[in-house]
Length: 451
Image (cartoon, rainbow, N blue to C red; front, side):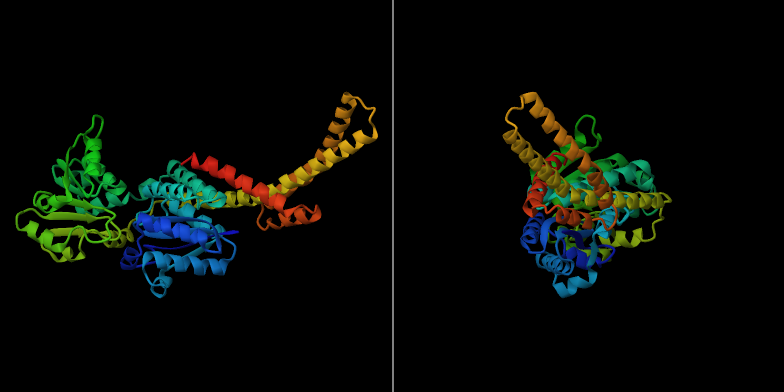
């Protein structure tokens, strides 16, 4: 089996296509289940964020895998395959590992170095574990990508190369003015209460806004976010929750609006904003971080409004300066990809080595039993000494070859050593497979506890 990723992102696709291809949580669940049911795939995980949709799978055939994963992405996104295909990218084996590690480090983000992607990768892994679609390979891959991302942020200054989308978006709204100075004293309206909206609310509070109003379809979640913002030790900002029906009224009071919901349709229409503008004198700043978009693009044409959305951010980030630390992160990624590949190749041969040692132990046990039958007069001490001697001889004979074959298997092209070992010692394929299944089950239990 081999690692394959098929996806599209802000780098490969127009925002209009990426927006239409976005997946709800239910769609992600169904996509994973259908991918696992497809013949070429043994494991599956989906990474869906505001600017990327990627399907990872362990496949037995490359071309069939690419065709199947592309078709599944088309079916579950609702974008026709012919329209979607030109924007899809494909990474295989080490290139797929390199891609995910780069994503985890923020090298492939719209804003280089942003750290929010680590939380999204963690959520992706948790979903694959919950649905039992992520096996040993994808568990190992996603767990390691999280470690690589954390290493990049702790050992380099990649954080200085860019900010989160929230911070970057607010900087674009501030248009050259320091964000703290621009935001100080303003009234903010945040639409949505998910992770991105929570981050926006906290960022605005830290920037010094006078008030944060949270509007959300579920009132309980909005009130919970207000509680977090206002509790002792929190931001100390004045905050309150309102129903979504009150958004129109709040627009007449707010100075800055940030929207990021999971809605499939527009949350803020142009006519609602236009009506609110009649009852206000100050300009209105809007930041839309949702995919698909929450805020009507037609608002760009209204006087007295500045709208920054994902498309605007993509254009602005293309000219953002790259930090020198990016080269250091790329080196880390390359080293980690090599180490991951070596570990996976070494792990591939472990079931064969275990099966060989199991066979050797069975041979020793059989021969010792035969000897005891032929020499019934041996006492217990003698029997134990003979058995121990035979085991030591077998262990010494197997030690050097098994250690060396693990070393060779870890090198590029080393996968064939497992086949050679099975052939030379006529190992039962089912015994090897049973060891592999046991390893997968053990790894799944351990990895589920780490997320």
